[in-house]
Image (cartoon, rainbow, N blue to C red; front, side, top):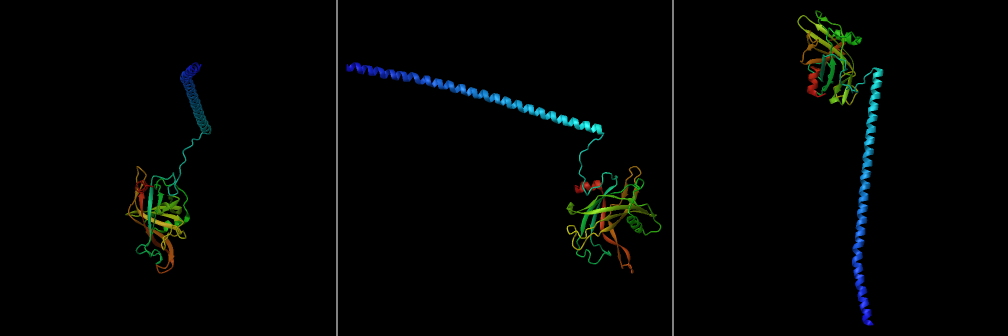
Length: 296
């Protein structure tokens, strides 16, 4: 009896081992098949999602392009109906000449300070300090100069600078100019209010005389240089004049240094009267040449 029981136990144990050995691989196979199926499902879902996103992006891009084209077409239609063509916005510097200026454009380089023999107040510029600035101006040729009204003060002031009775003086023409003089590399400025010029013709030589009315630097602490300043009022300039080109209509003036003068009352001539006093020196350089050199 005992042997029968032992034999049954051994057979049962063997059956269990055999069953465990067979069931385990079967469970792994089921898991593997389930995992592979899940992975393929996710891949199919991601692929479909990517296709949906790509299609939506393309649709939005096409819609944006259509809107841009529609806006452009509407703007063109409005311009055609109004007959106006809009040009790009251009920012005009306050140190530049107006766009309508002639080809006779020059840049004046002013060097203001005490000069030998000046009748300026003895305390003015005694330290040796100076003010340097530039002013862009435009002369019309005498033949084509526009008959624009010039301030009476400038007209009378220019004519009073002609001292030779044998000289012939042209009418006073309007001098085009930039709105402001450029001081301290453009960080300071001085307003230019009005300008005029004329030609003095003598038997042996000719002179171009011009005048600019300025706001000055007095009282402007940012633009003054201690004991030297540019007074408010009219500045007078003069340079040798060599005539006008018949083919190009451009004037020819000297590139040499000239003097800047102001008119102030004093007693230097023996009695009190309006005197011409040297304020400094200047040069006139063709504007295109000056722009290439100055980079502005």
